[in-house]
Amino acid sequence: MSQASDDLTESIRPRDSNGVTRETLDEDVDIERISRSLASEEELEYEERYETTKVIYIEPPERNKLFTRPYALNYYCDNILYRTKDGNSASALELFLDLLYVGIVSSLAAQTTLECTGLTLLKYVLFFVPVWVVWVDLKDFMNYYFNDDMTQRTYVLWIMLLLVIYVNNCVYILQSHGETAMVVVPYMMCRYSVAVTYIFYSFFVPQHRIQIRIYSALILVVTCAWISVIFVSTRAKVGLTIGIMFLEQVSYVIAFHPITKKLLKLKFSTALNVEREVSRFGAFYTIAIGEFLYNIVTSAYTGPGIHEKLWKALLTLIIAYIFMFVYFDGTGDIVHLPALTRSVHSAYIWIFIHVPLIGSLVLVAYASSNLISLDEITLSKGGYIDKMSLYGLSFFFSGGTCITLVSLGIIAMSDKTLEDVDSKYLSKIIRVFPRFPIAIAILCLSFAELKPAMLIGLTTLMLSFIFIYERIILGYGHLIKANNKKNLSISSSTPLSEIKHRITEILRSLSFEKNRSNVTTASSLPNCEDDTTKVGTENSQNFNFATV
Image 1 (cartoon, rainbow, N blue to C red):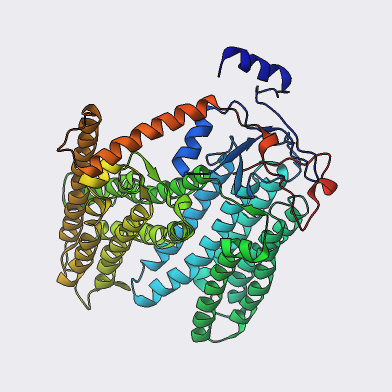
Image 2: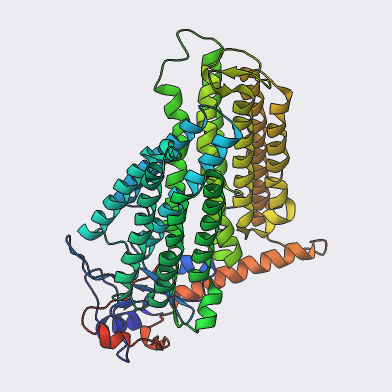
């Protein structure tokens, strides 16, 4: 586009304080300050990276410290993604919330490792999942509507207070119906609070109205079933809890699954901010990793000097280090399509696999802490220290490590590789697959009834093999890619797949340059009118579309 046309475009279109073009669609839906003209390189990169057909960047309304009129940060309208540029990372409020959550999970894990039996493991799972459900509800709420006003801060504080009551009464849940109620009722209030908040926001956010009202209705119905858990026997409590937790996950899937959108013929639907979602899970995972470090440095149980307990502590640090970078490196692809945008199934797999990942990771942290404090005795069947089963402790450590490693492998496999050269020479399966057999091998170590130092040492050795193997493989793959980029000439002996790759790279480059020179205006977009609600009539003055 020439300089003259740029000047003409700037002169005839109003611009906001940030210099972004604004346009308004006045038919039934009042879309204010849609910024798409003169698309920046960042916007075009988003479309290419996540393979989105069209993205509309918009500005949020002005915020008020006390109360900001609720608006959608992320939504789809006629398969067009509307999103804001801001809010792509976790806020201070969310990080503060994550600190409490990891503390709660750590408290549950510490109680579990006091005895290390199958019963305590079952209790850990049954207490952990409800806490995770509340965290996911808050995470999604912040992803959709975060504005950091006083009402949202108060809401988060209210949930945190309820969770503190919940976790402090978990130990006494079986003593009486009253103690059971002190665990069940705070959790029910957390769920009801989420439902009421969504219902309130539905009056201001027509883009999400149908889906969040469906989800709120399902929450209100399913949560009532928790009352029965208070009054039944222990075995019945376990069965009812598992059943209700399953219904809660089904409710979540029903409310936000694309099939629901198709059945209801919704023009508007919810959408997650991919960067913010990845940032939240990454921050939570990092804080969970911190439990390894906390248990190593906050007590002096290793004693003075260099000895076996200190070596075990150092090896535990290496385990945490490996887990940290295996998660964030993923498959090691420079260019990949995240699971959250690859498909519906991969997105749900990516989200739900974090449940066993975080739960097992924190459990391993506390199991390793107990192993470090132990003298060098055999972790055999029938061996106990106080009430703690040594054989069970060994399986908590090795089994938790196995689940963590398998979960990391599934997370990596759920992404889609977009690097043709790397895929040709070093496929994703070759890079990631060793995690699975090594995870099984680590689990089998407990059957050998080893001593703590040997168990931790062999586990560290196997994880180090994965870490070094993946670093070498990734480095080799990137060298291949760099070498092929230098050799762009095609001869008669060049494989057909290589020719296709080079042509694809050239076309991508040309397409990107073409997009940078094009100007897409809001007037060319379809009229996003909700068939079931007249958005413009309800919010004609202060309503803004804001997106994921």
